[in-house]
Length: 397
Image (tube, rainbow, N blue to C red; front, side, top):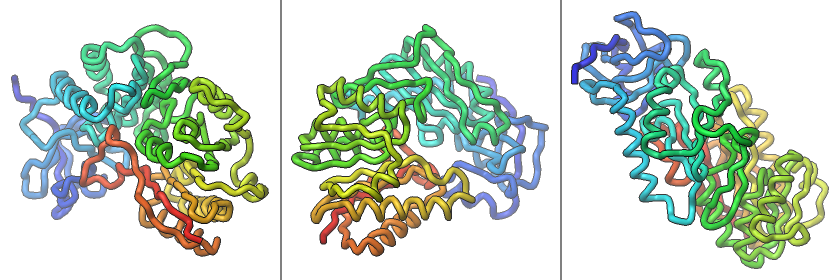
């Protein structure tokens, strides 16, 4: 294959250390020279100050993250075959880690799978993709061809409307890219449990696939429990807890459409609203006013911090919700608490929950740390990729 000569960026002295440690980004302030006149989303070669090749990657001079690593093999050509090979590797990994009783999972997890800015989620025979970088946008036709050839889906739907995409200078795009243009509802199996997913109007790509292993864990701990699932969304944790033998599961969400979906998913799995009620309410208000206590409480709120400037306010929100939950947790009861905010780092989240426990007068044990499932791999040198963090705690008093 003919070797392509790519435009190049040269880094300031000493600014290559993060890349050498395995981080996949170069920030604009680290670049001292650009040669070859690359445009937004073009592929460039990154070099250190001595002229040594570091990596090939996407370039965007308009954003703080000016370079995103594609490959450290600088002799590679980023051709259609390059993407086909990457996709093949991702498919092989999922074949190893996804069981026969599940047909919904994440196939491509952005940098974690070598596709900066691309998410691909599988929902039975439907694929939902999200593109967040100008570089991936330029490669869209190659990506679609590879997905159709290797996975043979009945439909590919694009849901690209993230804040990251806007920062990259891209407009939102939500449309069917391949296959039938029917309604956006897909039925999936997860560990033989049935869920209806709205891929058009739902949050993320329609379902929180990253919580699959945590749903399994909490379901296994639910026998005879009184469960409160806060911010239940479409009720997936509730279904697992009901299947696990919980005596009662109370599901709370402020969204009317989410509550309708949660009731439907409970019904799909033969659970009735008498023992498993879904309540449309503000979770904060409900916790402050209820007199009921529970032996398992699940806190999986939406991202309270969408930007760095939101961190202080979000921290207060996380503390309040954990404080109220601990007040309604029985002695020996378990709290599963999560943050999916990129800007709430793990150490900060731990401190917030500990402060909430102190103010609630609760002595807590840590049973385990919770994170996204293995179909959401991250680069070991890229801690920012680990957005979901959680704690499974026991209240001792």
